Image (cartoon, rainbow, N blue to C red; front, side):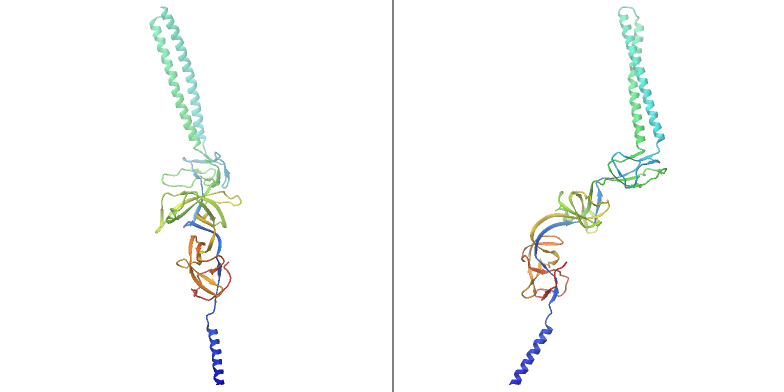
Length: 380
């Protein structure tokens, strides 16, 4: 009997050791705590946006000629009205001087003709008084009247000749000014295509050529970015935006939606987008923003300042999470009632409490409701 008891005891110990050896080992997992913080509903661009200038002029001459003056360098700031480049203009300057001389001649001729007309009027009035007293013949009076009238017509026609000469002078000055390239606004000279002594020609119709001077207004910049057509209906002008640039990773700039395109682009199959423009609230003074930078935008649709939130990547299908039970060391699946959400955070309205820990990542295999786990810390 005693031997039988010892046998059962040994068998029980063996089975206990076997169970302990073959029991499921806890899986090391990373857990994240349910916390309070801001949650936002965002709309982001589908493709990289582009930093652009509010004003950019690719300036060219509308006539051909030889470059005689190049007064700026690439990267140089200029003010509105500054002369950037001139073509050889001695022939046009000569035409302006000719037109000025012709105008002076017309004015002198008018002075002579109008004085002659005034003299003719005085002679006619004197003969008229003499004719009334029978001291001058009717023929002489008639001749004086005709002469005075013709002189008056010549004086009037000289005004027309002066207007013609003034119009010709304006034309020649305009042609002269076309040989001068001026800055239409203050900005930065981005590019120059032309050298001293080089002959430039205007672009033929339908064949674009490089501009003589590419001028950019660097005081006003915006981001042009495409968003999915599905999100376009929720975006409004004036909505706040976070702007990020590849050139300054980890930094965000405040902006506002300033324009929504009135049409949908179809650049790719099954990828229709709407272009939006985002203006900077204030341009940064500590960094140089260059037009052409690639940029991303996040349009803030809604925001909750201090609600319960969890990382969006922790959600299973059907808005469920695996909650950790510290008393049993197991994961338990719970359903959540969620609110606002974005790619990073999801607002929790009901289902878990603040401070409870849930599975941080769904990438680990073998984890499900009832899995025994051990905490390996929180993700960084």
